[in-house]
Picture (cartoon, rainbow, N blue to C red):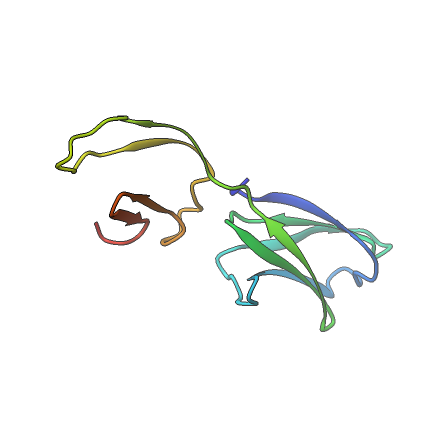
Length: 128
């Protein structure tokens, strides 16, 4: 979901505990400082790591840096789902407030949620 949680990485050469770091970037390689990633546990065989991932959206990249050598894996957060909206009719003059019910609408960061109805677009964080 978009709230984050723990993921388990398996592989090899994860390095000794304390010498590895994880961080999140966009698919284009831009650092995403608002998306937290922290190593929760790392096994002594250097083959398994539990990472706590913060809330996110879309597709991002989890980076594992071990002494300057970086491995990456894509994180795909669930798409938004609209269960219902009310009211389901409105006058042609506009100005009717809509209430959407669903999940995974965004992280709460400005600009992460946008809704378009006809020619009107609302973007979270923009002055109305």
